[in-house]
Amino acid sequence: MCGLAGLYLKNSELRPSLGKLFAPILIELTDRGPDSAGVAVYHDPSGERAKITVFHPDPSFAWSALAADLAESLGTDVKAVPNDTHCVLLVGADVDASLDALTNLGSDVRAMSAGHLIEIYKETGEPSKVLSRFGVDRMAGSHAVGHTRMATESAVTTSGSHPFSTGKDLCLVHNGSLSNHNRLRERLTRFAGSRFHTENDTEVAAAYISYRLKSGRSLHEALQDCIEDIDGFYTFVAGTEGGFAVLRDPIACKPAVLAETDDYVAFGSEYRALATLPGIAEATVWEPEPAIVYSWEAA
Image 1 (spheres, helix red, strand yellow):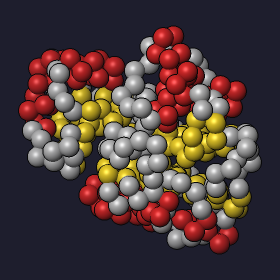
Image 2 (cartoon, rainbow, N blue to C red; image 1 turned 180 degrees about the vertical axis):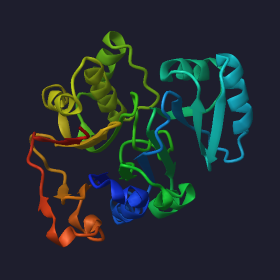
Image 3 (cartoon, rainbow, N blue to C red; image 1 turned 180 degrees about the horizontal axis):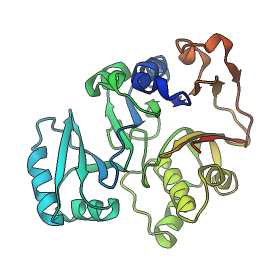
């Protein structure tokens, strides 16, 4: 099962209402994935500072102490912005150096995303409660990608929930099952230096897309490469700092709906999830074709 959602705002005047528009889409897909939920929100650009969203299961974790240790390690300033079990760290260093320093601290926090725009929040539990915990409906931004999970192949954990981020400002959500993910995981580890933190096949797909982006491919081209190199049945919804894309496998057995107006592009696993969007009655609505990449990227 699982439910996928995405909203890419073409009209900048709608950006203050991103969360308010997006949250009902994801909540409507609760019956497709009641075990956990997550969202990647693209907002509040950090400029030259790295933005790292981290997770610890204890909401009372000493985030300020972590920020102080990280600042001392890097010799720069670090600001911590806690949000329940997650915290956004704004670091006066580049992204890679910040992630390396965080790892070297030996802390038991887990980096959920890193870049200059993306923030990922995900937790176990009913989707409406997860979104409420993080205040997603109050968030502004340019686009968001989300997922409701029905854990049929692995344990219900925060780390195993979607979205997955394996590169700067990249996120991926997935509905389906990949058949060659173990072999692909081994190749990416050996030849691309990829590091994996879960057994989830979606993390492997995200790492593959990151690898193709680092090779100079655009988001659209990286998803086209998936058609040749990733086997199984799947629907992918991916986000980057300036883009949003959708791909269904050549069989396309998983449900998917796209809707586009002059103001936005929206994706839902089912049309009912999009029904509350303004102007949906006049939108161009269609089912994505198999093995065709649909992408929108800022100029």
